[in-house]
Length: 456
Image (cartoon, one colour):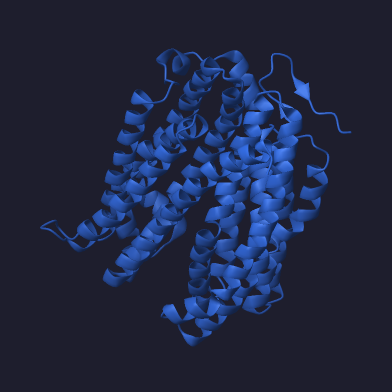
């Protein structure tokens, strides 16, 4: 192995191992909520699952903003331009604060209205209201922590960021048990207890992020950059990152519509899909980490002006994601018999679950490649418009309408509808490959004079 290859491997491994662990820990939180609440009250579990959709929508905004900020911070870090990173940091805060306050106010003062969007069952609404009023406070600390951790990951503090996330998840699970069931002298709060656990654990993560930023990170959050954003920073973010934010919202709403379609196919289909969704997230932890880590590694090289190296690293990451996607897809399919045995479902739901997990094999492969290439490699060079167009067309011109027709007009069997609804990642692959080979993503966004990669 050459020194260059060794450097690439070391950089990527140092990023994706802790990020994979971090993603895995995050995936355990909804599992913890579901397992504990279903043992106490099925309506409480349903309420928390629905109320969590508010945070899901908020996180679409958060991820769009942090991914956009990360795009530039990775390149500025490669260029060793700390002042510009601080400007990006301040601008990220300027964008995040009004969005977070909006969701906080809605969760605190309009919880009943939010719950009525998702259900008309009074018992579920009551549990959901108690959850949202407390969980709304976590929206502030959760959102700011996401921004802080984005800066830490891009400036050499991936391990610290991972340690913070792990401690938050562990604390969340422990506090879940205490406040949901009323252990150690605490009152049994049910759904409200899950909200309190989330709020306290996110507060802990927020405090730890501040400590690391103040004591270790060379990039500081400066009030002047929050109050007065740099015009060039605003212009760059608007041009390159706005499509990324729009992409997250378009995809998120489409993903919600898929859940709505499956939710109208019956209780057995809904139960099976809920379990499959958890398996997908657990199995996909590595590909999400590869996407984030790949974006940082490639972005560092592009920002440093080493465009050839950035292109080379991108190619290696694509090969790695194809291999890992195949392995993860096979793993999801092989898990079917074990998962079915571990779940207490009706025979019909168990049968749905088995075949849905088999179908996960092709979905996971497509997700692995697309998330790494579109959200990782393309985004590292500011090539964000393609992802927005690709996801919008795929989701809204094919998956949602065709899936709805298959379910409600042609009344196809549940598994046939599920097969169609999981084709979105595979449909995108040819377009993603063609766009990748154009190398429009090989671009230095932070050069004094913009550099573009010429295809040879």
